[in-house]
View (spheres, one colour):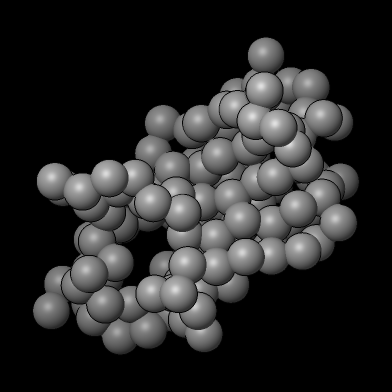
Amino acid sequence: QVQLMESGGGLVQAGGSLRLSCVASGSIFRLNFMGWYRQAPGKQRELVAVVTRGGSTNYADSVKGRFTISRDNARNTVSLEMNSLKPEDTAIYYCNAASVTRTLDYWGQGTQVTVSS
């Protein structure tokens, strides 16, 4: 069983920055993907950014150039540096870790990010 623990959410003014971190515990050697998703009120959960074990990254168009995802395989952590935050970035952010086929798919409990205008 894998557990994901997020930290770093909070309230920030538009234009500000936040850093989210997620630590994975348990057997994660088969989990190629680690990433962040978010869900705003009344909306579906959406991909924010994902990084593979080898370091390849993918970002949602809405965050490209503002957010940076990074992964430390030795420490089983994934982080999301968020800059130039906008009110539309307000959401609950979830850490995710998954195998290639998503046969194994784990989620954190979520952390609230609120961006005030």
